[in-house]
Amino acid sequence: MHARNPGTPLTVDWFDRVQVNRPATERRANTLTTRRSVKKQFQAAWLVNAITCTDLTTLAGDDTDARVERLCAKARRPLADHIVEGLGLPDMPKTGAVCVYPTMVATAKHALSNSGIPVASVATGFPAGLMPLDMRLAEIRYAVDQGADEIDIVITRAHVFNANWTALYDEIAAMREACGAAHMKAILATGELTTLSNVYAASMVAMQAGADFIKTSTGKEPVNATLPVSLTMVRALRDYGDRTGYKIGFKPAGGIKTAKDAIAWQILMKEELGRDWLRGDLFRFGASSMLGDIERQLEHYVTGRYAASHRHAIA
Image 1: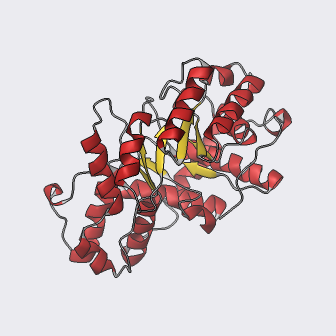
Image 2: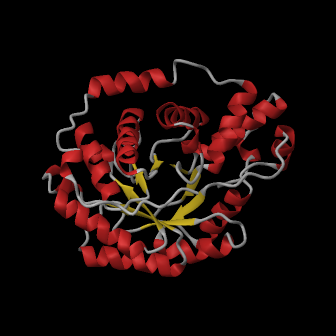
Image 3: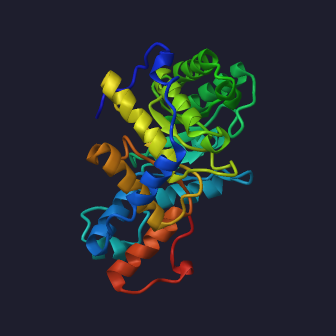
């Protein structure tokens, strides 16, 4: 395990002169998945790895204990036994975490007992974050008290638009303190930040304030995770690592639905950061439906046939 990021004092000159060239970033992102093709057993291996890096998520207004329990059962056994046997895996893989609302943390924690799968909780007025800071901090403490191992916080986007970096830093640092031992993922809501330069700056401030992960989106914005935004964020965390020596995790979320997406984002991580960021302690997908397509593709690899959707367990 890598050392946890302690944060740094706010240092604006690490990012205030950085201007991200969108066309160049988009060109680089577009070449990531076209330079090579991942097929057969190699594709299967990448898809199994994606399962272990997935935050299996339910963040719906009609969530119930039963739905969360079903999701946790899927997190424990994401693949059918015959697929695991056909792949020659020594053990059933498990997802990286289960992500729920604070009121569902206790249910998830009980359902995942003795599994080693952490429970992540969104907090701080998710998804908008437009609540008084003391209420957002209280929500973090509630989720931690319920047993959350990880907290996904949302930032105040207005601080980014106004370049009020001190306010953004102080807010995130207070959230990090409220998280205590729980790891904190800072959601930047990149689809609402307008420019890639804003994305880079917000990423850097979040890491300086002590974020363990930076995360693209809530999944509720009109535009969620994209490869150009993700490239900008991983370049920021690489720059932060070069300056401080600390490794920061990355979590793309929202709109990632297919096995093809799972491979694309893993290629990004390997090309830009190396193999260390292909593990769940430094990379997570925020996804719900993606796991179903991964299972479908692995079934095809094992049997040569695509199974009907009703043959896969509901997650």
